[in-house]
Image (cartoon, rainbow, N blue to C red; front, side, top):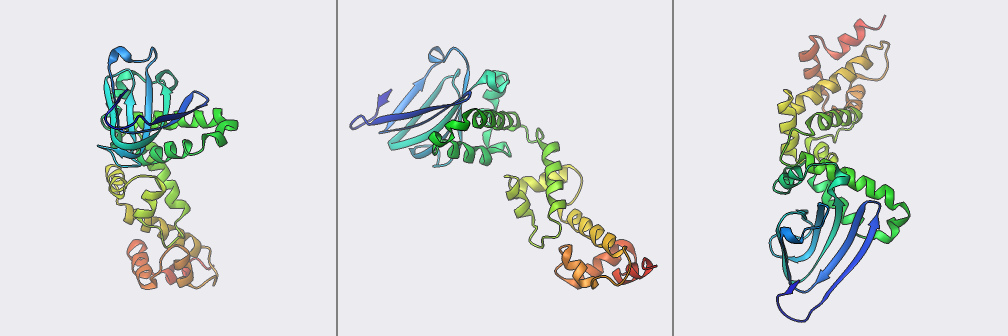
Length: 265
């Protein structure tokens, strides 16, 4: 370790959560050049969240280093970082996959989720020690998914799209259901959400409207007077009765009232 300026001020707290090593380090300005000759015997992936003082990355960003490779970690001024280290053997991935992922970490839809996970796991590790093995196993699985998906936006597309569809169907009655809320619930950007749907060949907004119309039509087909049509429409997320009536007729060729009447026998 080389201290850039001033008085040496360095410290580290270390914990073990199953197969995952957790630590928080703080110091005055440092530079830690690392060569292949200094690499650990077993390849290790380190995921770190800087708190303050780094030159190239803002506080809260997620950094990844594959410790069998050459790297140069540094910051200027008093800084700190939280980190988890995972043996590559625990991840079950080739070292080449980890190295490619390190150069494309932000392309993963899991980037923000894993950044928050690392920050939270390292916030109070003492409290997690009693369930350390479980927390460590969860951290390994999240890290594996992050590395597999980084640089490969299609890697999680199938499972992610299925989760998006399930989430939408479970929240169809919520008038606040929007692309932004769907994206937030899945820790992806709205842009990524739209691309995911476009690649699957459908419009997100039109699909949501279609699912809501199907729900309303099924309820109206139960026959009898039931609830007013406008109330059924609201129940399925349509806040504007006129819009609901127009879309229902366009989709099914009859009005919602005519549809109900046809099934009232």
